[in-house]
Image (cartoon, rainbow, N blue to C red; front, side):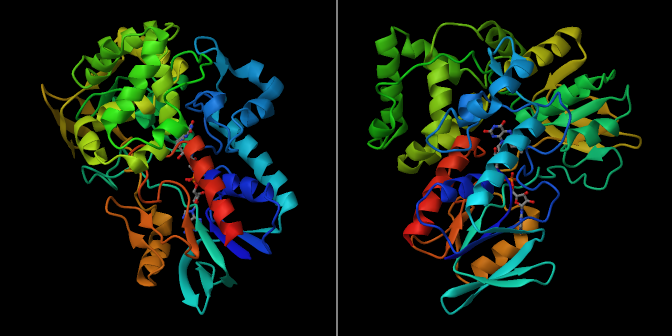
Length: 461
Ligand SMILES: Cc1cc2nc3c(=O)[nH]c(=O)nc-3n(C[C@H](O)[C@H](O)[C@H](O)COP(=O)(O)OP(=O)(O)OC[C@H]3O[C@@H](n4cnc5c(N)ncnc54)[C@H](O)[C@@H]3O)c2cc1C
């Protein structure tokens, strides 16, 4: 079987690693990647050392079913990157990119892999074959195609593209902070993990001006707690296969906490207070709880990454959950690492960082920008867009490819966006573009699990 993979980021690495570990071998695997970030993708290329991975090693293994794979690779490197409060190593993103690179290189040594530095622009059917076309004018016939093209870039909510002082996409952060005047007023649109990255990057560069995080909800990511080993007895993959509603999932969490002697009602009430509580007060409480012995939040966060995608596909009331608790669920399941939370807390206490809720508008006001928000808004010299794209957004680089797949009937648009592919089809999608996934950006375990399932399906076909 001849396989084409569009995109050479973390999802492609996970797929190659899975294919290399199966007994059957494809006849050829061609990876198409136009950018300079082969194997590291958008997230793990060279950038500031201050910007680290967002999760503990147990969540960062690219090998499905082997949670210790990344920690073993880290080995002696771990000591140099220990986050004291977290009790685990958190490496700069580029170091994680080296891990991906090594995994991909090892897999490529066992598979007939060819890498083309070219962007896939379209695919058409020719009998039972697919013909892949690239921007460089290359055409190649394959039997199967896998899309590993990643997610979108931040949406331009206020139509500011092209305005001097507006940073449309903060990555790489090294470039963003280099272009910000040392004591300029920076306003960041968004208050999620990307916004936290921007603050940490500015602080690491010694930025002296005021920084404002602005969003509608003002909700910050929760803060990871120090990992504690716990084998769940109720919130397990087997039990989650039986759930139908969020109530069923809550009952499993309650049973888990009952066994531990923890108060489920107090835990749930605290989560539901997320959008209502003052975010600065909440951050302070969460900083104090990094070492807290209660396991409830740790269990839910770990499960969100490892079991979340499985449960999500079964929930009949997922639209209601998304409508009512979207910000809370994203904040809990995509937490910030303690080292970043400490930095935010320090800047907030010092008054250099402020949070603005109820953001309504950002307009150019020569010079700089004027912000309209509930209770007034700041003036800014620079506005950084840190709005997270919805998980099923089509990346710009894949727009013509996706259009051709829809036109050829090789894929359809899912009811909530993303691409739907019929079972047994010649096309597969791994990562955020796959329809039907949760509303949270795919984390490494989710991407690895999807990639492993895709590798098995490819070989079975
Ligand atoms: C800044 C950032 C930090 C993150 N940190 C973490 C973290 O610490 N832990 C975690 O679990 N998750 C994290 N994530 C989530 C992240 O989405 C996944 O970890 C993972 O990187 C997704 O990999 P991917 O291969 O699907 O996408 P990407 O890494 O984006 O790779 C997609 C690749 O496809 C290429 N491409 C696009 N279109 C085409 C085309 N038409 N033809 C050929 N190639 C194409 C692109 O050039 C790109 O290199 C982070 C995400 C971001 C953006």
